Image (cartoon, rainbow, N blue to C red; front, top):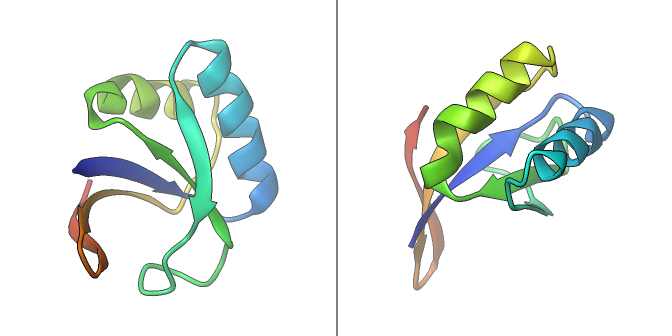
Length: 85
């Protein structure tokens, strides 16, 4: 199963994004940020890739800074980063 992962510069940025995305009916979930991606923020937002364009547009329009968006795949050993979006 593949999903999107938004990594933020701070936990506060993640909270702001979560609030606005949920307000726009985009299901998101706080998850621990994989250490192989970054150690700057301990939590990221997980979302369905079908919402990618809407998520990107909302973050840009609302000027919420983020470090990156990743496509991640769940594998038996945990996860695998498929690509940086």
